[in-house]
Length: 138
Image (cartoon, rainbow, N blue to C red; front, side, top):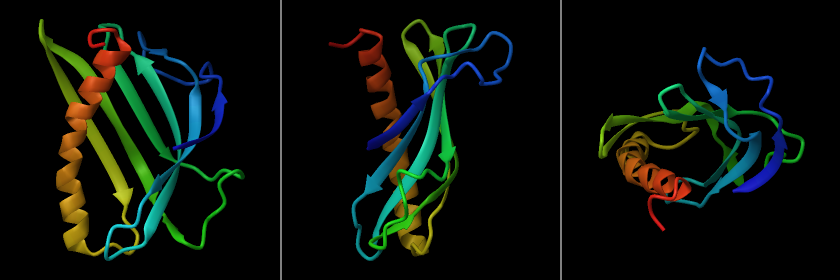
C-alpha cells in the first residue's frame, strides 16, 4: 500500500453522533498476479468514523489520483464501495459487517468466486487489527 495523500476529515458529512477519526487518506493498493489473470491495483479514498455507542466504521471507494497513473502491467480495479462496521455484540463479542463491491475487470467467474469466499477471512484480520489499535492485544 502506497499512501498518496492525507486530507482533513472535517468536511465529511456524517450522521448525528458520528465523528471522523484521523484524516481521509488516498492510497494505491497493489495486488500480485494470481494465475490466470494479470496483476491488479486500486486507488482508494478511505475514511473512518466512530459512532455514539463506540462503533467503528471504515469505508472507501475508487478515485483517480495524479500520483497513481495507470500501469500497463496492471489492471485497475474499480472499488464501487468497500468497508466494514465494528459494533459491540455483548460484553466480550464484536459484530463485524463487511461490504465489498468491486468490478473485477477481466477475471474469470471461478476466480472471482474463489476470492469472494476468501474475503470472509478478513473478518478475523479486522477484529485483530482493532484489538491492537485499542490496546487490548499487545
